[in-house]
Every structure is written in C-alpha cells, then in structure tokens.
Length: 253
Length: 243
Image (cartoon, rainbow over all chains, first blue to last red; front, side, top):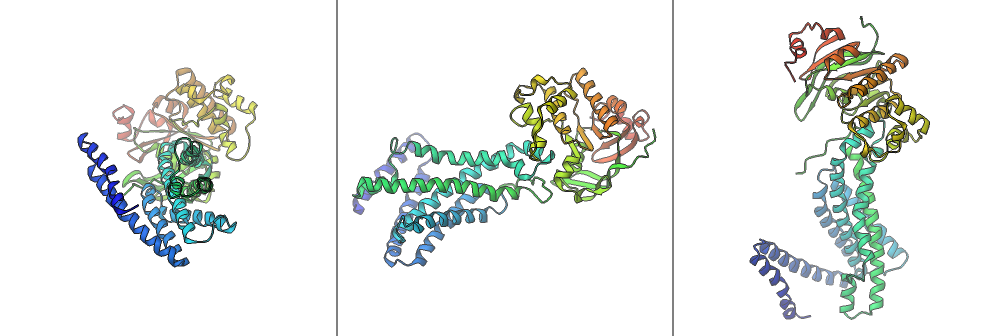
C-alpha cells in the first residue's frame, strides 16, 4: 500500500468527525487526537520493528517487550490506584505472563526464537493482559466496596482475610475472564480476528493464518486466567493488616 | 448489686480516631465477667465503635484493651473474634440459605454444623426449623436478626457483644431473645454486653451499665444508676433530652 492510498483511508476518519459535528457529540477533537497519535505511534513502531528485525539482537527484543510492559503498567495502574503497590503487582503479573507464554512457545519450539515472532506475540499477550487487569481491578475495587459488610462479618466470625475476601475475589476473576471466553465462542462466526485477516490480506494461506490465530487464541486464554488470578492473589493481602483488619480503601488520586 | 467480679473486658485510657475525628475518648473501665452489661448513650456516641475495638476489627490509637486479663493484641485475631462474639444491628447475611449462614463460623474452621444442632439453634432463638433451608432473602428483618444471633452463638463465645439486636423485633420476639440471652448468661456464664436504646430494657436486663456520650464514658455502675443518675448529663439523657 502506498502513502497516497493510505491517505485516502482518512475518509474513514472524516465520517465520524462529520457525524460528531452534525450531532453535537463533541468528539471531533478526541477523534483527531486519536488519529494523529495512532499514525505517529504505529509509524514509529513500524520503523523500530524494521530496525529490530534486521538487527536480530536479543537486547532489542527485550527492550521492546519491556517498553510494552511499561506502557501497559502505566495504563492499567490508574484503575487500581486504591490498591497499595499496584504498580509492582502489575509489572510482576505482566512479566510472569510474558515469561510463561514465551517459555512455552519457545521451549516447545511452537514458534521460532526470532524477533518477527516474539515481538508481535508479546504485544498481543501484554496487551490482552493489560485489558484483563483493567477489567479485574475495576470489578475488584467495586466488589470490595459493595461487600464491605460481608467481608467484616466473616472476619468478625473468626475468618481469615482470604476467607473474608473470597467471594469478591472469585467474582472479579470470573467477571474479567468472561469477555475473553465469550468472544472465543463466536470467533469466526461473527468476526474474523484482526491478525488472521491481516495475514490473509497480506497473501498468506488462510489455513496457515487460521492455525496461527488458534495459537494466539489459546495463548490468550492462559493470559486471561493467569493475569486475573495472579493479580487477585497479589492484591488482596494488601487490603488487610497483620491484625487481620480490613484497611480503608485509599482514595484514588 | 455490688460488682466485685473480675473484668471480662478491661479498657485502659483507650482512644480511637477515624479521619481526624476522635470517636472514643480516653475510656477507662470494664465489663464484669459473667454479668450482663448494658451500654446506653445517644446515637453516634461511639458504642458500636467500642464493640468493633473489642472484637478486634479495629485497633485503638492509644490505650490498652484486655480480654480475660490478656492484652487484646496478644491473641490470634481469629481466636479473639471467636472468643468475643459480635452480633450487629445490621444483621448482615451471606447470600444463600439460613443453614449456610448458621454453618459459616464452623465452615471457616473447616468443620461442619450438624443439621440437628442448626435446628436447635433456631429453636433457641424462637425460629421454626422449617426455615433452615429458606433463602435469607425471604426472611423478615426480625427473622434475620434472630439468625444473626444464632450464627454468633455457633462459636460459643465467652463474651457476647450485642448491638441493638432487638430493635427490629416485635414484643414477643424481643422477650424471647431477652430470655435466651439471660439464660446463656445464667447457665453458661457467658459475659454479655448489650447496646440498647431502650432504657427500660437496659435496666431490666443489665447488672451493670455504661453510659457513653460523645465518645466518653460518662458514668458506669450498677444498672440501677439509670433510676438515680449522679451525673447531670446522664440525668438529662435519661429524661430523653438527647437523641
């Protein structure tokens, strides 16, 4: 695709801007900012990836993955600002998920150990893990508030913090995982996944593209479950002190 | 009645604040062992906060609390909370059946409550055994309150803290619960501390009474003090000037 044909695709940006202006939605500025940012960010990533792929040096691959984890942490931590030490909990979760998934992929030689595979797959894993974290933290903080009386009741009857928070934790883990599982049920029927579509457009064999997409889908199931469970079990102890008393939830900054 | 029995719960200059607001102010006093102490005072006086301190749900900023002569913070939190049982006015229920709620204290210890024992508990609080497998959503406020009391009793606490537990009950149920608590105190020597707004109840049930106002212990002594308060503020409270 040439830059000229790409610039023609801006018609798809003009339509929502015109609609926003006509209906007074007030979304013109945000739409323009989002468009400009996506152009700059993706072009920059494109050039960086070209450099990394050509150099094939592990240090650049690691740096790229760390950059992804940093950006994902920065984005997700706002949702868990009320949980003490959320930044390190998120970083630990993202690193663990990344090491686990890449460990399986590379260890069993499912994918080759090249930047061309590691970086895009890492992007999908960390990105999905970030969305899961946001969903989990959103639900968990509201569950804690809504079930405060229940939590204190269990503590007052001689329960441990883990027993007291159990319902809130399990409800939040399940709620954050449901979208991933539900979207997999309808995949291929309602929508063709972006990565698979991209490969087909680029001329790849559709069956090969499907095989890769299945790999990613299975990978994302692990990502979803490990992210929610790990973040949940890292987060709940900080809600209590040594005397097994429930601490006040910090005001979000 | 003279109260020379030892203290089940002892407070020594206890202060507690929340968000820069002092709720309990330098309280020193005791709840006598094996007796019924009634706790009276206007709304917002700090009575429920005092109970939360005794059950270990919160800790004082300063001062010491002892349970049976042992500092509260030397107890394992779970052991303390089983020893000092707490039944609150809100009677929070866990979603599910009455049986699930009654079993909870034992479930937390990895044990099971036999059905026969659960039925006996319901009988003790004047509830029919037919409600055992009923969903708590279908219970009336009074029934919930009774289930809440029964649930607290499962742990067989040595000290029982009751926060306005009869306020939502009808006259007959209120009398049943009063009889149950009096029986527990008489037969099993359970120390009872009972928050009530009903001064008549405080006088008829209590051996000992604390009057708390604005976080301070204003007067404590034999419950008959409510008939003849020494303190002018307590006199005005008894006359119903504060609420």
